[in-house]
Image (cartoon, rainbow, N blue to C red; front, side):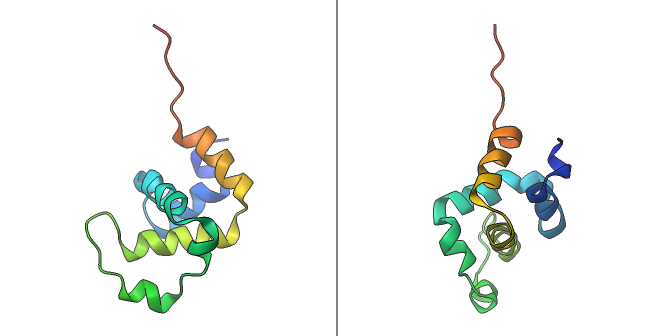
Length: 88
């Protein structure tokens, strides 16, 4: 299954930018899924962007946390964000 065929990949593509998938997942892992789920639209509107941290990133992370299970997140990380090592 390719990145774009996964539920999380589709959400990242729709809400943010597929090139920023690592940042979205890092945000979720840093804050915790249950905490991200509880972020309100009002809190998102008050966020000031600092280059990487944007309202869109948080909105995308919240949608992933609401619509996806923890196991889906781990599977997405394992299959699409980790690089397989090359043998030399």
